[in-house]
Image (cartoon, rainbow, N blue to C red; front, side, top):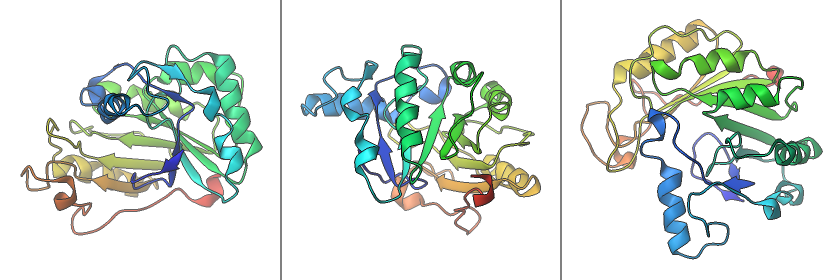
Length: 245
């Protein structure tokens, strides 16, 4: 558990690590690259590199944090991975319920498993559930998410790989947009991000522009820091209304 540079959260908690690729957004996975590096450094918890692994020794970490904190859960994995036992998931969510002072943000690309787990249950009130949508082929994840009983439902439209066209954002509370980083990053066009921003404004959904990534609004490749976070000259740092929580 540690503080993070991810713009929309405060800290990360990884009760499991490792993953496998399921869609186009996974192609240049930052977590895979980092896991391989951490294994080479001998970092505890990454003995298996990017193979899916349970980390039961990390389960109680949020219990030890007294200060209210917003956690991104499994920045280095997918909490709803095919190899994740539901019995272990129960333990993860028990910790979340025991710590109502914290907020937990969970993202998955495995919407079917997410829906199966929550088929007969509600997400704890301090849990934000989200799905990643990188292209038109993955837009169906939004429909699955909207039917799950959760206080906050959000979308991570990152890496944004194409124009998503028209979006139905009914019962979605928050949308994060971002371009891809790294030497192999695929470019994001400004018009794609603007399209999502405009639809969020029209449908009363909080909009957060995370980054341009490696490619800037001018379609020039440079460092992520140099490209910044401005979209049409503004920073977009909106969060869901507290009334949803």
